[in-house]
Amino acid sequence: MQQALSRASRGFTLLELLVVIVIIGLLAGYVAPRYFSQVGKAEGRMAQAQIDALEKALETYRLDVGNYPSSQQGLNALVQAPSGVQRWQGPYLRKAVPLDPWANAYQYRYPGQRGDYDLWSWGRDGALGGQGEDADIVNW
Image (cartoon, rainbow, N blue to C red; front, side, top):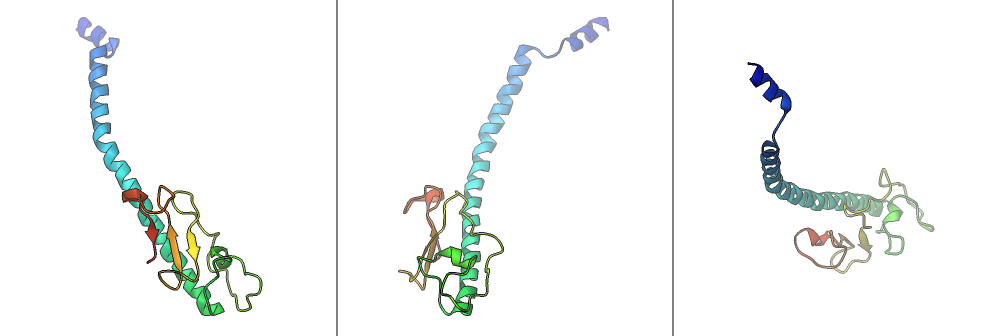
């Protein structure tokens, strides 16, 4: 009995600790890629949701003012009344115009080349084109 107590009080052996570390490493190697791939997909979905919200605000702006903000006025026209606009009844967003999930400004162009206006995010890479998480998030 005395020998069993003294062995238990000594703690773990180096081999036992190494086995536990290897098991934790294997679990992390299996779980981490799955987790981080979901984070990338979630960022894309968040960007699409923000674009949808901006589109609703732009539509409300158009109904009040009669047209969409110009490219020069940009999305800030949804928060602050642009000079020379008479029927502005905003703000059309509760907070400032958000950045995309990758901390870049959303791109806006009026008149649009693909619709009444173009609204998009360049994606994770911040550049035109790309695939997967680097793909552009667009409203057209």
